Length: 289
Length: 309
Image (cartoon, rainbow over all chains, first blue to last red; front, side):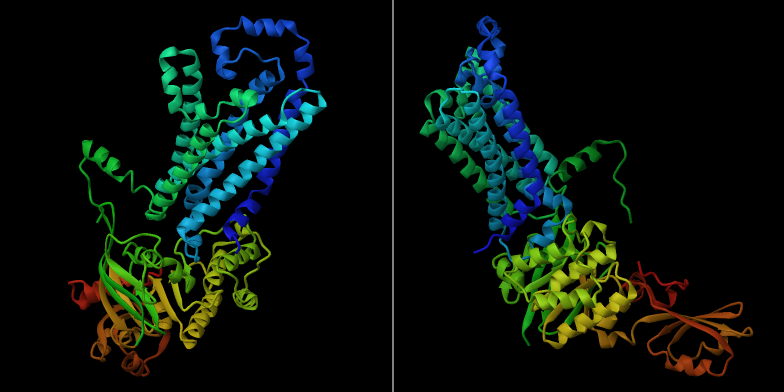
């Protein structure tokens, strides 16, 4: 059994993959190399303890940024790693179907004997493969550089947190792909994917600080990622299941909406709006005979 | 005779705008069938319905005996398709592109792909983004033919091809017919359809106007003929020639509107000092005006130059 669409998608993305892995590695090495000088600084520890509440937005509610777990959490896991993976996931997810449709090549691809379900699944698998490889590059350099500066941190828990970040990004990417599958509009799928990623981050972080928002944290997918807890205590099966279940549900919706759609018919959804706007104007519609 | 394409009341609306209306069509095995109509008549819509890229608003379509919305993958495995607005994977080379589609089809006879490249003079080493429109079209055609499908669905296949390549393409279509395969071609170019097809369906504004044998077209359609004489000649000499509907003088030139066979006119011209003789095919719009409009054929406009757009 061969997977031509999967294979071709990876091949087309090989440069993209290489640059992202290199960039991730450089970012990790440069940040971790500061760690030894950070631990020697009592001033920083003191500063963080007296820091304003909003600082916790970027650390997941932690004030400890000097211990190995605190440092890795604040520098990478709580915000930067998911954010970078979101960018990758939204880019790939929106391109997978809507991008291809926008470039006009989807007609040709779907004239080959490949079912729409299979196309969605192969493209989704390629997205997750690329996302996973980039997350893997992050993890590998994080482990290597942590070992190089003698940072006492559990590799297993770092792997668990990286996996959780990968799952979270996969969820955002699958959502973006689904919007593209349902509308054929790449811009919209990027925008809604970015909104999901940022809104869930904000809701989770603000919920830490604003007590009235606290109960709403569970409505944010970011809550189930909870990097600081994973680094300290390990993965929680329930949270992993929520994220994985979310991915599966979104993938199902993507397949379903793509199967039912008229491919290449753009502007269909926006037509009623346009008509209403034109009708509201002073000039009556003129027919072009 | 086996029916390869059957549509029953096939209708497609995009929101409130029309694609095709109540289309009933039968294409038989082994024929080259032309689907002719002006731009916006619903040709591409029909073809895309057959490939299940879009779904009918009402009605049904069967290809190779299978309903398009149910057995699309099986249909597509046995069909070759060339989209009207062809977009290729620009970053691939021609070779990579053909290899990708060969893999999607589960492997094809590569020798045949190479033969097609040779015959259409397509250079598979080039990156597709660097190719001209006509050269891109060649890869679209090769891709549609590469697996020797039972049915070819081609949307404006010769657009962008130079005349020499158009001839080669006509030969490929003729070969497909000889092998008993079926070809469904959409076009807005009547002379081309006359050359290639056995039967033609005329569509206009989403509706099927008529299906005719190409052989019967010959004596139905109009030609505009311009004859330049070495000395002024009265058009009255030709008005009574059979088939001539109208004759007008313009200096040394006489413009004639002729229906059916040219033979009587050519024989009549033999007695005159003819310097130059040109014949124009009627444009598709003129054909519709003269045959399917309410107008009398004698009021057809007599402007020089055929519209091949």
